[in-house]
Image (cartoon, rainbow, N blue to C red; front, side, top):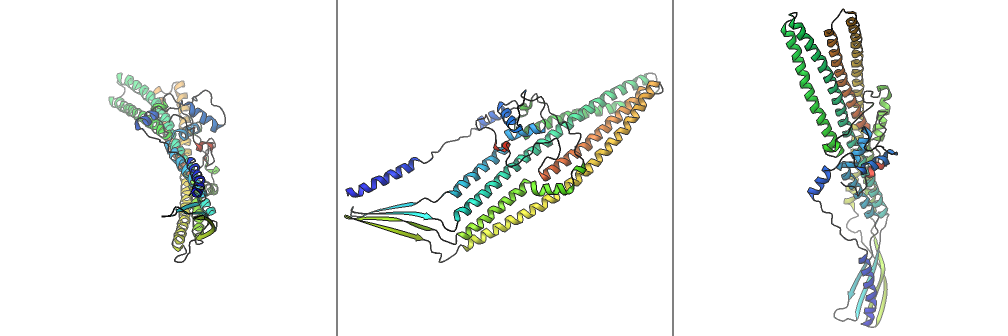
Length: 472
């Protein structure tokens, strides 16, 4: 009996040490009131955001916060705050963990069979599983492909966030420019009404002319109120796209220096756009990674036709005698050779291939349509600018006539109002061009404006996320 215990004590020590290496559960409760209060406290003056922006821009930003926020810095703020990116990063962490799981080797097994009823009988069997046909390598290959796909998904989510920032900033800038035009038109109309009232007082025009001018002035007042509401709405949309409350934008100024100068259609040839759409789009690259995972999965199921082997020594103690053995075991593929899982894996590979081809065709069609819409919008913008130049010539003629005494101030106001109306028409054409450019950028998932240097790729440091100890 003492001999048995002498053998069991070391074994118990090994099992105890193995248990000491186990990980412990760590609670991570979520309290809705705490997360809400942290969200409300977010703002663009965050010091952690400053570090994040400087790391990704490659230079210091002083003073902080910057005097004006442009598309690039606002996009970085969104990558720092937006919760959609945290969800995508969590999915990447999941595929990284799955890669560890795929690479793990199976643990050996130990079985103990004490003698019953006699205490002088003990059997120990130790078995080491050996995977055959490269199954572990195929598991790792499939997991690595899925991990790569999740990183493309993270970059795709980041591009979606950046696209939302672009649209919101465009709406804010355009609404601000439109408000300035309406206020300039308001001044011209007020001057016009004042002049008409003086002419009416001497009886040279009917009251109807004054009333019509006042109606136009009232329309401008209404348009100003509407545009001010659009500015507030655009600011709220911008805050939501960043991932902060509207109060977090307090005091921030926004700029888009090149908004009035979108790239020419000649600089965006159909061949270049189509190539960028096919090669650069993140969902295309994600679909390729998913196909590679399906391919590796099929190879794994084919490898499973060959059974694994369990091999190891055995020990038996009986009365005062010890017996040592070496045993090997394996599953006998008698009733099936894994035909069902192989067929399922082949179907998944075909599905992944079909999904890739379908997505590729959609991307090419979308890029061609977006380029056609953008080219048309640029032509409309060019015509609006030409018409405004003609009206500016008329303004100069009217100003000369007033200086020579052959015309009155009322004519100048009328020409100025017409120019402002053409300015609004030009802004409308500019909005359509910029939105079409945004759709074209979404089609290729790459900035096409020369001033937009910030690109999003899976290897971008910005996608790694902000420091984990920040106040979220």
